[in-house]
Length: 113
Image 1 (cartoon, one colour):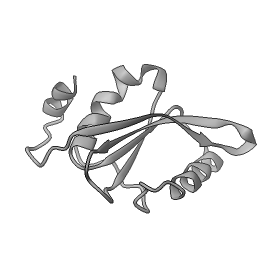
Image 2 (cartoon, helix red, strand yellow):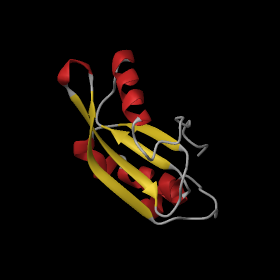
Image 3 (tube, helix red, strand yellow):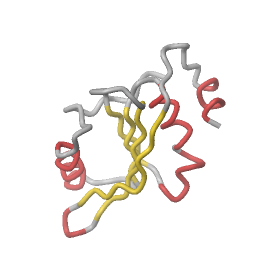
Image 4 (tube, rainbow, N blue to C red):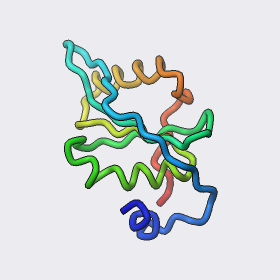
């Protein structure tokens, strides 16, 4: 499926990395709730840009996994979180990101595809 997404989105032949996945990350939100997330990242690469996608993790394998893997293979980290969030929750996610050793300091817009 990742191959199909890569071809369909017409990604170029730039360097392709092996992709690692951290599943089941818990992002604390206000009022004691938490947001589930998965992180896709290029193995062996350091200090790479981070892209954030929103989606339903229960159907992540069908919806976001191929896209997240294709983006990560091109040298980006991808954080896929479980649900749309409001402004307060966005601030909580950014605060959590700042505490992560893999966070590059900014969230990058989705690469042109």
